[in-house]
Image (cartoon, rainbow, N blue to C red; front, top):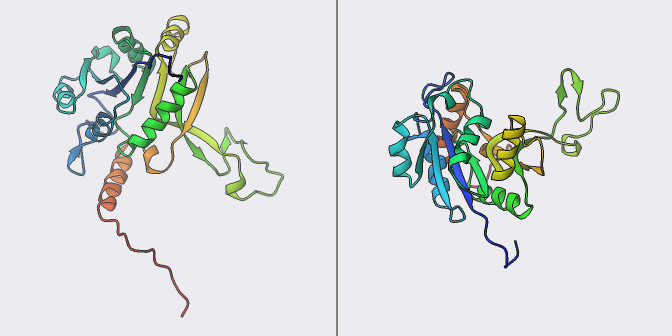
Length: 243
């Protein structure tokens, strides 16, 4: 961005439904003594480059949580929070009522995402003037889809994993859209989440930052990581030595 350009207005939206079939009330469930959703809210609220912070939910229980963490509360209708509601629909509803240049969506189910990653993601989106930026997780290993090899050849020697071309899956913890592009895609095509038209790029997220709590095993893993992080030793790693 040059000095004579106006700083774009960037709004953060954290979506949180009250219902969850696989993990009951997961956004409100305690993780290491605090509600799961509080981790992302605490991370984002300390960042200065955003103009407004919103918690988007159908449940009034989240209104107090939003206020406690310095977020505005956006109440979405119940039909935009049921099992069939799409990110396209509730994103469009939100953008009809909230003005911005860019919308950054941060999922509350990824408690280990860092402020540095969020800042790098946002800078990447704005400086490249993207219509959409999607966080992805790289998998640098042999991958198949519908029984067919994607990034390797069955009739050739398998290369070392570090030399393989990575395959990327959606991490979804961070999704960013230019407001006008999202609105036009939705109004013209009925979809906007993947930004079917426009300039799109993908931003790698690795390690524990890519964890997305979808089921009970994910929650238990996150709990174990939280406990391990609080007991990590600063000592040098030890290795087996032959006697």
